[in-house]
Image (cartoon, rainbow over all chains, first blue to last red):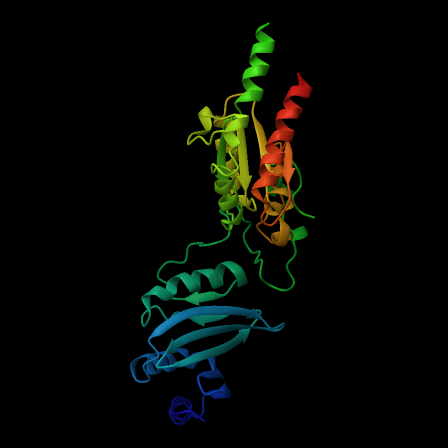
Length: 160
Length: 143
């Protein structure tokens, strides 16, 4: 058990659902969704995990998981939070890491997460003419769900 | 007489313009390699031009998606007729590993009419020159 894992477990004993450290330099943990801001603030300010690398979205069937990846102090820390698929609301972390707005917009584009208090909620990656309410990285999405008007101006149907 | 002259001019100076529609740079490097003195494409009159308005042939590399499709169409429309398109690399031919992605159009022929397909990831400069020579033959045969 590393020192960082020890500190995290002591500080957030009752909000950690799952924690494991397969190598000394790597920690994976899953916490209650409401605690994400406190954990990130603590990890960045007190543990020296200063590089906020990215936020990854995962479709877990009935739940969506957002994994916050932090690096620094010779350690990689992945913090996962799971939210219900029907109501995928997460809190923004842009008041701690302003640059995280890109990753949160990406989550909204690809999975349909609803990020509360996001400073700039416009689309980032998917095309401008993409229909509302379709999220390409969800497991139940496929190209046949797109309307036929998506082929306007093209020489052939691109959906195969 | 003028027809003959035009055909002579077309087949002996196919000036090319390069359009990257999101390529990984592999095919682009092979195109640049094909333009070096080692392969000497100027013997066929092939010259890389900076502007589509000066070019007869467009070389498309990379998987075409909804964002780059509009730009590809715009650049194609700027070229003077008669114009020809060569899809270089598997991505521009069919989408390659990106086939089936949510934003991939699966080949440049979804947007512009493609005359020659050069598969490969990435194709060798020899293959690119071979493709252009085949296009020249196609123009000669079309009359």
